[in-house]
Length: 177
Image 1 (spheres, one colour):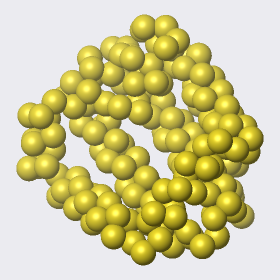
Image 2: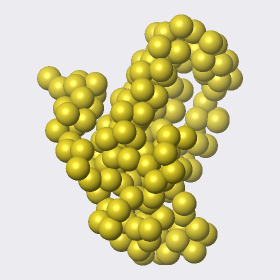
Image 3: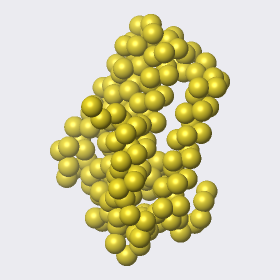
Image 4: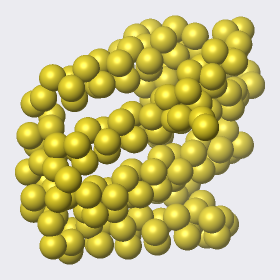
């Protein structure tokens, strides 16, 4: 059975270091490596939250689905930028947490991609479901408590370390941020 961590490590080790996110040709391997690290981070954070607040499991499950849908949104945005504006992808790995989509780009993506539209609807529904969930308040309090724990800080340091390694591997036109 393959774990998320094992998948992320395998992806990272399988990638070559001879290309970069910002170049004449866009490297989708950089996105896949980033996506694996980001998904592992989302799942590890979720597991810590469930450990700390088992009574928040249902709300945390909705939040997990929401975070994964948001990651999927960024994957579609990355592909769009790679096709239409590859010059916008020059900020190294750190840029992949927020992609420079203009309002016109977002409207075009919504108009031309049924998958993107469906994902946006799912994000809206999950956000609404989470906010209306009976244990939402407890979930939010548990999140705040979680951020202060040594386990969270350890997992977060590992996550940022992985991103730094990816940034070294794929480079950054702006250097380390």
